Image (cartoon, rainbow, N blue to C red; front, top):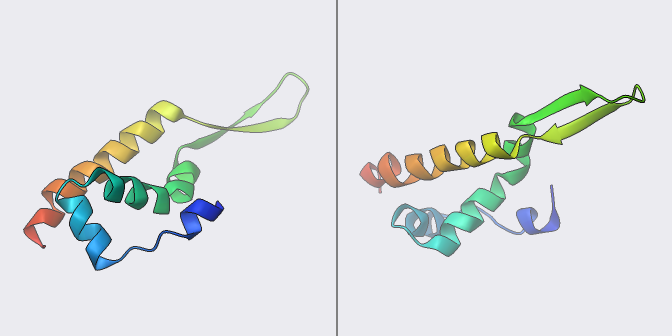
Amino acid sequence: MSANAQSHELTYDLIKRAVHGDQQAIKAYLLHYDSYINSLVMYDEVGPDGQLHSYIDEDMKIQVQMKIVDALQNKWRKLI
């Protein structure tokens, strides 16, 4: 987990601001889960040298982030 991701705690206020569309709060929310999202979208590939290389599928990462933001603004709004 990066130092930036560790500094963001999920507080009620942060989630509430993210639910209501505050862009900085949404970025902080996504940054909190960045390492987890990266682990979900990572794939391994054997290179020509026989070494195993790990890559992050950036397109899939964006799709996961969009689903999270959609859930924040649609499902959480009913709860807050």
